Length: 541
Ligand code: 16G
Ligand code: ZN
Image (spheres, helix red, strand yellow):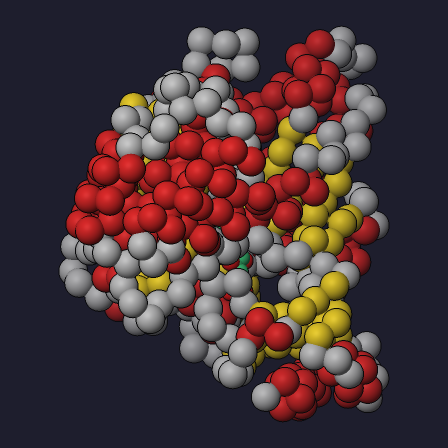
């Protein structure tokens, strides 16, 4: 049976704060770091059970709150193939973290055990990591205590990016098999990415020096990870100037910088001009706080000039990747379906551009939905507009790259490139470092500068508003969050407002990570955007 007495002690040591109801949602549990110890202890218990359920395979736990403010923190569980925790377990996590007594917690765990026919004598193995937040140290202790309670075998991976932790989980579980994903160490991760990158760019680096890529690391864990990666890549193949790399000064994480700041405000990191002297055509990109998102941007005119800032977001990366990869598949002469997965936030222009090239599906927000939809294609590209995304290559696709006999030298080259791309791309989850290398590979292959990539399509003017409401849980959606089914009658009112604008689109959904409702608006005429967004927001309030 369960070690009830030790659990009782653990619950005493890490008491659940009263008056807080936690939710295990799209991003695991996320809130102020100071109140999360009890959550960490309890989710650790569940992770150990998850590992037992999977026959002792290693599962993961990541302590991070991504792009959220520094005082926030969170905990997210990773399944044995490196993907998000199986959705049916999320409800048990929510119940466990809200149980008010040890007894109640034990009964949640007992239900979980019997519903999933878990054999408690199966060993458990859990690897965990954390980002740079000040509350991480304290939370990691609670995670370790929960795992010790269950007698799980533990691997403390220390400071890692979220995608590195996903990589480690997959690498640990495939070690020594035919499908070995890579050496299960941080070094192994850098080696895998850099050697694939070097294969892809080896003879493509032009003699003329390109200006360095400026990388805004959000003052987060992406900074040390980027510096470690660069040790494996000679400068002539990738010149980078890293900024916002301060992981020590309190309060700077994600503050006025990072992918979410740049994407939401559609502007450069605050105070950038003090750190970089701008060169025309200068490339820039931003990671988020745990380095699982990336957006690119550049200035089309002189800095400071209105409309000079040009954002190349997740949609632009998806378009770049889907276009390039589908072309390679054609060149290789193999019959594989390349598809793209987006959410309702994808800019309408990107969807139009993509649909001319590949099949496109729309899913609700959240990596778990996109990831699973992408698995249905032989090669599935998925990206959220916010810059989180990756490319999944099915086993049969990867086999085809290796086993097809090429009909021409061009086909052979395409097959080699596809093989290397499958190595370069972190297929477990969106990964800023890996996605950055992917973009660099494609731009070099195409010999494209910022404007050429940007020229693929013109984003429709768009706006995202946050609306505070009394109860966000009354907002329920259908059709991949594009329509509301509750509160009754509201969708009809939204339709009526949207109908007054030219080629416009707007939708409303409850946030999965914050206590608010989000309103998205998109219009073909820039001058109409504010008015539409405000009108819909007013209906919601
Ligand atoms: C989480 C999701 C991200 C999504 C965001 C939406 C994962 C790993 N992350 O950060 O994909 O875009 O939530 O937040 O699934 P929202 O529900 O508050 O709009
Ligand atoms: Zn993130």
